Image (spheres, helix red, strand yellow):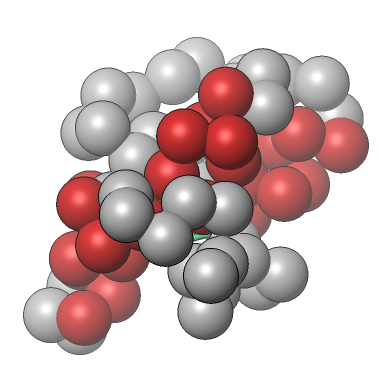
Length: 64
Ligand code: SF4
């Protein structure tokens, strides 16, 4: 099962632009056991704002 936010997640754009590797998709977004551990997923569930450069493990990357 894939995360319900898979298509709309900003990480897809960052992947297309080559700014992040596909490890996030493979380790979180596309993995049933792990997408619920994604920080972004948890923040969406709590209705909290989260920046596009926040990775699933909570690290922030420079996408400028
Ligand atoms: S980064 Fe998190 S919220 Fe976005 S698609 Fe992946 S698992 Fe879902």
